[in-house]
Length: 407
Image (cartoon, rainbow, N blue to C red; front, side, top):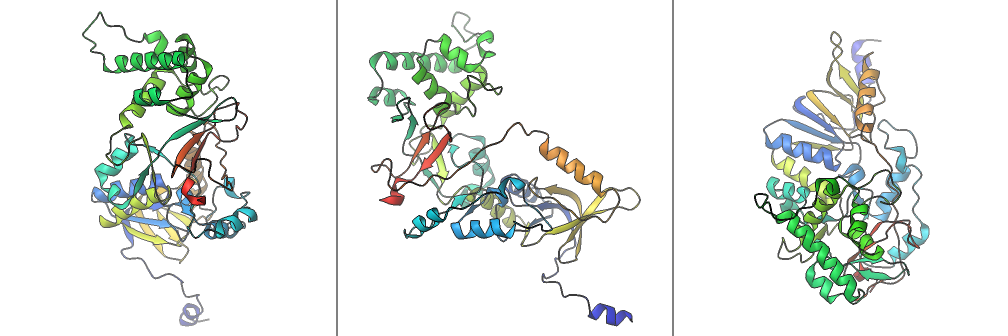
């Protein structure tokens, strides 16, 4: 076979060639961390190529319609060149849910993973404002927050002095206890350390479990649950879990909550959320990166890493189109793997990536989508529901509900 015949029989790549062929940084996956890195690198003048094997932005931080999410799960049910985290391989979409949602004209987006709500004073919000990514997002304020009590009833969360006075579910003694506690926290945070006569929370108490400190303050169980899970947003059961929230961290979370209230004129509460789903967060940073010169290519799997034959160090990637792209650095979404190999040292590279992505893995998060036939609070357009540990329905801790969906 001649050289010309060999070239004529090669399959035509389904992708156009990428120009240029060398970058300062290649990023694989458009999840939130990867999108922030792309935006930061592009803003600093680096040349960035951002790839994603999926036909949409966000990777596992995306928000998809029922049809798109079903297609995504089905398309990844068999081995592929870039395999998603097996956490999602057993996820099933209920036919009942599909039929129910299809009866309503509104388009529903389901979050694959990631945070749905943000504190107004959170560092993530500060980053969006500072970077300019906020120009590509539209947020909505959460109207109210409720927590399931011991009687399986929704009770409002009194998160400010005005809310405490208006709350009808709390007795006079409970209101006084909660007011004294908030006053103590506020005094501790705003105290002038030069005034020696003022009382601060002791270092011993700050290093103790937050749940024990609340008991020491003689707060009743209901108030403790509100403070721990509805305001401090503790992730685990603070009575039995090994991941105990320290008082110092709990006080800082209360400070974050308090500083979030009223930060923005159009957000009266402490929490906001992207109207079209948390998948808008990575897309906002991707748009910002594109403005700064980052090149984006979707539907582009990476089949292998390129390494230098002499040193064995990384030097680039090979794409599914067959094109080799060189780069100085690589950021790989931990939910993806690159199974191919062009060098003997690839296994060591891949193991180092896996070790990095799993080093901070402390636990698992169980997520679910709950669909009701009618609104739980028809008079509110949206609200947050918190299910504390060991309540009668303890499968979820947090649930953002939209009353307007089923009006």
